[in-house]
Image (cartoon, rainbow, N blue to C red; front, side):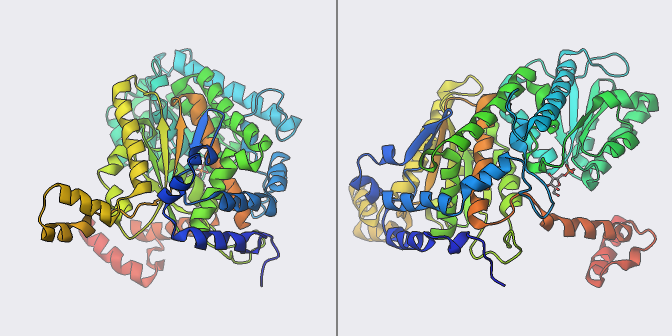
Amino acid sequence: MGSNLVSGPRTAGWSELTAHAARLAGEPVRELFARDPRRFEHFSREAVGLLMDFSRQRLDPSALGALVALADAVGLRARMDAMWRGEIINPTEGRAVLHVALRQPPGGAVGGADIEKLVLAERARMLAFADGVRGGAIRGSAGQRFTLVVNIGIGGSDLGPAMAVQALRAYTTGAPRCEFVSNIDGCHLAEVLESADPRTTLFIVASKTFTTLETRTNALTARAWLEKQLGRAAVPAHFAAVSVNGKAMDEFGVHPEYRFQMWDWVGGRYSIWSSIGVSLAIAIGSGNFLAFLGGGHAMDEHFRGTPWADNLPALMGLLGVWNINFMKLPTLAVLPYDDSLRRFPAYLQQLEMESNGKSVMLDGSPVECETAAVIWGEPGNNAQHSFFQLLHQGTPRAALDFLLPARSSCGNQPQQNLAIASCLAQAEAFMTGRSAPEVRAELERQQLTAAQVQALTPHKVHPGSRPSTIVLFERLDPATLGRLIALYEHSVFTQSVVWGIDAFDQWGVELGKKLTEQLVPAVEDSVGGQAAPAPVLKLLERVREWRR
Ligand code: F6P
């Protein structure tokens, strides 16, 4: 059964875009620059402290115009309004999607007056707690200040705060050290506990559902470790939690004042703005956390109030659509030129791929075009010395996002200047490439023999026209990080509207979770263990042998 949704290839303008793509396919981007001396002005936009330069994308003014028109054709404005009004735009889970309400200032009324009240009240409680821990007013069972905060969570309950605490390291002076433990195997937790003093350690169990296997297991291990050293009575003073599941927090023994609420209308991967960000608030303090929320909110206002042609998140989302659906580039490499952003690609992996990694549309019919890009990446200079070779000359092709601060986030501007030069040089190299005649001329200047020139030339050709966007900003401060995250969130939303999919469910992760639960008895050799599928039992035979 086909879909009636106006999205993807059913959208007016889709075939026009296909024609633009075919026309531009053979057009080197450097030719586009040669033809338009004002290309930078035509293909860059600056707003809320971010300068987005997409002049190195394989686009010309008429293709960009058609791309921007897509936003209206799919009804992006109506969907955005529905999100802000708190309508159920995540139908498969029957939920509203209101992470934008979490970063509103007082009086914002985002999601309605009741939601605003709830959000502000819980935010105030959480920030008071965070400042109490940070400043030493809230202490452990033996009256000592906390020097170590261990966030136990996974996915959205880990990646956001872990990425942000690393990114904003420059703002963490005087705060307890924050560690983020997520994996089930227990090794990371063991590593963290090895040097931890239970008297000065605070655990935060961050889990929207409080049922996630990894988080529950690590939390129980941490509680057993603490009990063993300080006794059961010490537990409430050393465990805080964030969840929608009050009953589970009760059962775990979380102190009523150390538990923080979140709501069904906050998706895990959009939850850093909620109390899930408590570890970040402890690390950077409430003032900086509010600045972080303010950055996100500023991007919300920009997204809401700016025509698509100048709207950074809408443009970023549309450029993704252009690259995925029309340029046939299935992956996006995210390359920060500030090492503090080293976890940003991992954060974006969940944000983009869990949101838009879908094959059916909102009405359940199959999508009619490719959806989310595969996101990957590393800090830029490291990437230059590992996988850039493939990006410059390999057969797989990718689109690239460079994230570039002008100022050093650690006070070492001379070295940041080298990072800036590296980033801009790479973006240029990816765009201009190096043609065979240029390579040949260069080799001839080096006085190589004709045979050597002929042999080497093909190896040194860079095809160029690798499309990239540079997001330039002054410095990586809390507000800027908030803007950057919200930029990508709304870009993901824009894409989901173009493709007609639900960006806020994640049914694809459930099957594996269920099968894991079923297999545990077999792996543990306990009752019911023989219920595993035959091929799995074969592997388990060897597991048993090797762990004997
Ligand atoms: O398995 C995926 C997921 O459901 C994510 O969407 C979520 O961020 C993560 O698990 C953790 O879930 P929770 O916060 O409920 O522990």
